[in-house]
Each structure stands twice: as structure tokens, then as C-alpha cells.
Image (tube, rainbow, N blue to C red):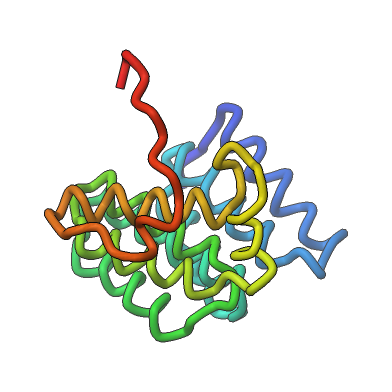
Length: 178
């Protein structure tokens, strides 16, 4: 048996112990522990915990699937990674967060069609109240604005023309370092 040490392994063990004390946070804690086990190099343990979280369903399952996709990409298990994102799309968690993270992951990987799909799915999960915040002064800090900006950035990279949603938020001025 391999022994894993270091801050990520210690923290993962603490998170696993916390599950017994906070069973209502089981999914969230499993995902976080899985992330830390992966960072510690205990990939099998990470996948085991993430699979358990995914089986719970709900929004935590969405976060588990995105994290598993990231782990599989790190291992260069591309079909398995894409399968996790397909499962995310089939299960449709209600929260936009898993789709936002998946969009960021896929944009970082250069898989822009996937990234666009994920950002659009995140936007589709915003409620009317969150979308109304677009019309309030916020310096672009509202969640809807950030998602639309990400979507617009990916659409531009793909070469798609701006649409009404892209034009619904102002352009941010470019800084010298951009």
C-alpha cells in the first residue's frame, strides 16, 4: 500500500473524517476530498470519492463530474473525461456552477465548442433575478455578466459573430497587459 503524505493528503483525510460529523454536506466534502487526493497523487482514491459523490445526484454530482473530467484529462484518459461531461449534460444539475467550471476547463484545454456549450448551459440555469442584475451598476461583477463575458470570449475565439446576448453587456476596456 502506498503512503501519501503532504498537506493535500492530510487535508483530504480531514475532509473524509468530517463527513461523519456533517452528513448533510457529504457530496461537497467528497468532491473536495477527491480534489485534494488527486493533488496528493492518490488518483485512485480521488476517483473513488468522486464516483461516490456523482452517485449522490444533485448539484454536488455535477461538481464531482467536472472534477473527475479534470482528473481524467490529467491522466490523458480523454474518452473517460468527455464521458463525465456528457453525463453532466444528461443529468442537468440545477446550479450553473458545474457548467461554468466545465466551460473554464474546456476553454483552458482549447476545446472551444465544448466550452461554449458549457457556458451556454450555465447561463440557462440563471434565474430571472440573476439576469436582472445585469441592468444594475456592478462594474461587471455580477455572475450573469461574468458568464456572458466568458461565452462571448469563446464565441470570438471560435470566430462567431456577436449576438444579442454578447451585446447585452458592455465591452471591458483592454488593459495594457492584456
